[in-house]
Image (tube, rainbow, N blue to C red; front, side, top):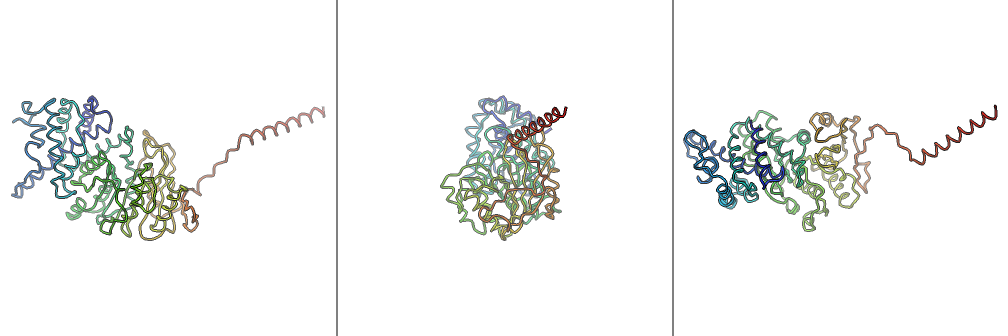
Length: 484
């Protein structure tokens, strides 16, 4: 049922002049879904308060509650068409009253980790793009059919929302940056093995895939106590995101996965000087796929000891610095990081090897990221001791990855199993850091167990051999003629 509702919403937005891409569909669906979620959450809290003999005070004024402005009902529980806003009246109310009202929540919030602040932040960053009030009415009516009460409903919602985020991977406006393939994220989480007691961080949170999958992993890691559930809700998952749309999507994705007030901050992580990071700011686990290919300004580079314009390399410095001693990380990065010959890349590799135990490198095939031709590797490391040995695994598949053949968890099952013992195989081997060139620190993935391919000869060599064979054949024929 939920899936059909989502499809119907997209169909309505497709015909609206203000929405032109999958990114717009997700953005506009998100703020309306968020208000419906808040309404369901408040009803849930009101019921709980009544059962315990307490009074619950709504955080939203009556005029702006979902049941008043969005879907006023008659005595039969049907939409009251006499009270429901339509057309220009609806868009005027949303643009001139609703958004300004919720925007103020940010100013009045006690702290950034409250639901008040999240509401204010979302409505400060978004705007209503749905131009037709009649289309907006259709979307609101459809969203009203969704429920967020039970865990089963939230699970279905999270699955559908993830599907929408995945679709953005092939959309315009750099949609692919919001989506890391979930089979890869799940595999990284399995290898890093976070625990309930860990504080888990992603400084380039995007759609919050790493935090959501960590939450799912920890929920089934053991039989959870009430204390465990409180820790998971309030003190486990942390993130930062620079871009407005990604910030909204990340918050919504975590909410749909069951985290009521996500600890995601809307900020540019790289604008922070890493020398200002103190012990209280550090995390036990870092899981991330930082954006690569970006070029940061000189003033941003001043926040880092190793100056470089490459966004991913600045993030890697940030992640190393913000990890606690003994902390663990799983970071996706462009594979050229392992072999680039510029001074910044060499210095960063040395810094990583000297300060962390880079125990595993997973080499991913091209096509892993839909819509992006770049090849990537995953770096697994622990902070506090230098690297002595690196176990490398090269994922070799018998098919090309793409939209019709995406990566799946089974593709990575051998890696997960072999990684436990760091065993050698046709796809895995161990590199001794003592054997690595100290000047270049080149860590290129070169599988010594790979089947040796027969080298193709140069065209001139082939032509020379043909000429020689032709001459030998002519000589033999001449010899035969002389005998006759």
